[in-house]
Length: 200
Image: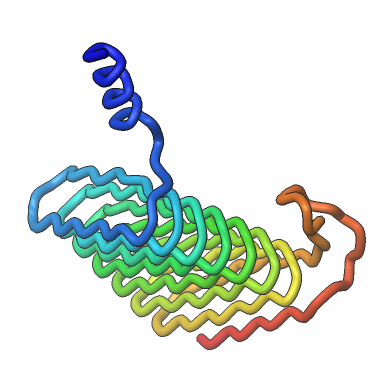
């Protein structure tokens, strides 16, 4: 009987759990070459991460619905990657410094994202795959690049750049999604509205 209880206890401890309403807070101050990797699965989870230094790297993954992600980096030559898969998720990335890279992937419906960079030689990339997604990016400085890809219907982009030698690349494609599957169904070419606002 003791062995059965022990096995049940081990199964409960090692079985994957469905996470709900969890909060992850990481604040990494100073240092070079710092690495932060984390993942969350479930609903109503939130990740708040701040990193300061040189050559830092952040890799955050969220899977589920109504999750929030807020990443902040300051310094030089930093990279942040964020992946959200699900519905009604919010992703936010902010960087201050030089030679920084911010990349955000969102797949699913009704997601929104904000990317902000201040400094020089920075690169921001957003990829959204799904319907009714909204993306906003801003950059202040020089020699900065914003790239965006959106696939789906009823999409909206807002881009603001203030500085010299800035560039914006936007690709939008209207497709119809099968309601029972996350696979793309290229059924119609002109569905929904596309809104693009660029201020330079």
